[in-house]
Image (cartoon, rainbow, N blue to C red):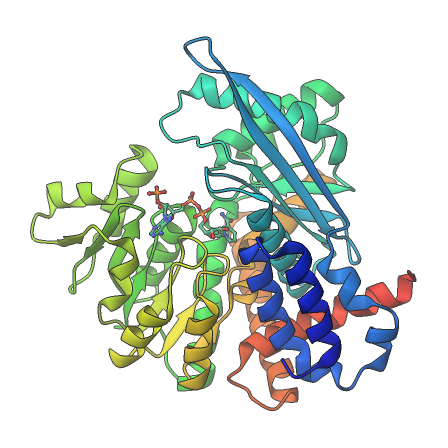
Length: 446
Ligand code: NDP
């Protein structure tokens, strides 16, 4: 970083939060993105906008005690990081995964602030969750955990205050338990959570939205940069959870060939194309492992290193699993094998070194905060329906999602062009998002 103002803030953050590596990584990427833009805006420094942006407005940490099926009391840690509400109420998912800690919550809340700004909706940024692992837990255990989690969280959220949703480990089932508990405590029926079931205020397309949105965004870039589309393109989609599955289904619908998918135990590879409906059966219906695909298709290649999925040839890579799943070695392999586009479904899946390599090699790189914003955008549409006490049809929501993703691509592209490099969507997305947030912060005073 050449900017002294940003450098000083980063050094102070490093001194205070040196152990929060994921958070520092997200801040570094953001600083890279806005560095040039800041040269033209003295007021930002005078008003301490960046210092105020990198500090969460509020971090809530709490104990979540619950009783397992054997009568044993277990204790997890719960978090809600309310990062920034300059442009609207806090909004962002809940993640239940053993790796959850304050650094991961802060990086996700920070990213969410910019992502939400890009959607064009009036939504601030937040994130929350717990180090609870829903895997191998009975429904009753998950229910008791969710009840205990909400017993504390309910004080801090509200449909005009903070509206959580799902993320890793938080599916419609967990959202249902959390919502039911909130309703019991408050006696209020509001759209306080999104990702709800259709029978009690959920929106059509919400479960598909992040994956579909990622494909709509990628398609815009393929058209703009290469005059191309998904037709006949070989695509690697990492992960096999909510985002990955709906990404893969949409890629196939758009004429692409999904050649590899993964879970944390390994990846499967089939150059002629995977049977995505079978993966849906394994993962969504039976909660199985990706390796079980070989029971039906024994000739498919299985490799037990999920990180090596990027070593296989493809035209387009769509990382949809988790943070830092794609490093420099993976980026080098992708480009060597002719990959022309990498768009991120997961949050911060590429390391800083990998991102730099993509930018140096001038491929189409769609950063997460722009490319995966379709999920939260559709959550915004769910909130709209809840307020209106109305439901939109599948096509209505899908068309709104398409428009929003197109708009996000165009706004990021235009900002990138303004900053002098139309291929640098890291700069484009960060500048487009930051402009709106900083304007709102400047207008509202200290
Ligand atoms: P899920 O829990 O539904 O799925 C996560 C998937 O990733 C699982 O298949 C998991 O496998 C797999 N996985 C985890 N670590 C690795 C790894 N190192 N290599 C390969 N696979 C791995 O989560 P989501 O699909 O909801 O979220 C995925 C990503 O997308 C996250 O980064 C999330 O923050 C982001 N995101 C999600 C949104 C949403 O609407 N859900 C919105 C925007 C972003 P296993 O079962 O073995 O753990």
